[in-house]
Structure formats: structure tokens, C-alpha cells
Length: 195
View 1: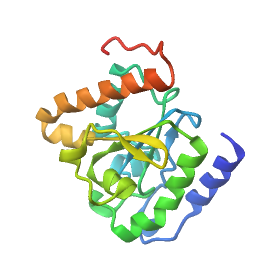
View 2: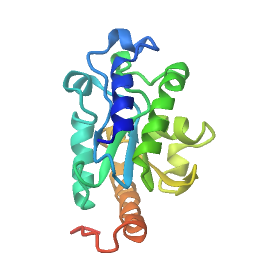
View 3: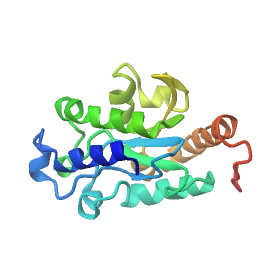
View 4: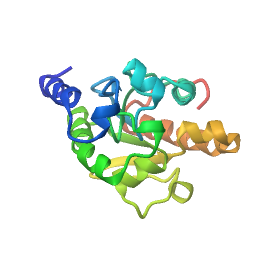
């Protein structure tokens, strides 16, 4: 990990700027390749993440890993996974606007230092805080959005797929489009058995 990213990690791990710091077990900095061309942005850590100190390790994370594997991607090489907030909101509630506002500069700095070409925005909260509250996940999922010179694609959150399996088909279409874009921008020879 480069020096600046290490410094940022130390800052984030010590952060007590909002109330979430009082109820968390662990701060979730993020995980993956710090030189990844794809950055996945979720809402915030849940119970399993708060216990283990890693992003997306519960049922949603297991489904995300299956989707990534079908695309020929993995956490070690292709992606870095972060969240809008780094600490678990109690009862897994949605982060408040003030909590998100306090934590977002950390995420923006991560994006700047990792410098991915593609952002995958998981779910409504990530979409709202990353590109604006006028966006709607049901209407705008699967569409490329230009975000500060990077391509961002909102997709349904894996938790939504677990609640409503009918969302799996459109989500798979969105991820296939991400693979096509990855081949166009990063690696024309990128292999996936399914795309």
C-alpha cells in the first residue's frame, strides 16, 4: 500500500468524528487491490463486517463474491471495496446525511489515491451520496454516469437480490456491461467463462 493510503488508513482507523464511532467494534477501511481499476462502493458495514473488520463478508458479500467470480473478477486483483461510511450504523440502519457527510471525504480521498477507472455503486444509498439525491436506483441502475471524470454504474445492492430474486437477472445484465467496459478500458483479453 502506498504511503499516502497508509496515512489515510491510520486517520480512518482513529476517527471519532461522528456518533458511529461510539457504537462500532471495528472501522472498515476497505479491502482489495489498492491499484484496482474497479472500485465498489457500498452503504456501510453490517454486523458481520463490524465483527470481522472486513467489508462485505456476510450473506450480501458472499453473493457479491459469486457475481464478481462469474465476471472473472476477484478482490485480490481486480477490485477495491469501500463504503459510504466506515463504521456500522446501529441495527444496520441507513447512514444519516450528517454521518455520510463526515465520512465522505475519506472515501473521496480513497478514490483519488486508488484511481479506478470504473466505480460500481451498490444500491440506493451509495448512488445518492456519490452522485446525487435526484438519482433513483430502480430508474438509473445499469446506466453509466460520468462522476468526476470516472465512469460510475449503479447496480442493485446484493441485499436487495437476497430479498427479491427477480432482481438477479437485471443485475447480471449490468455486471456483464461492466465486464464489456473493463475490456474496453483496461484489459481487452480479460477472461470470464460467462461473459
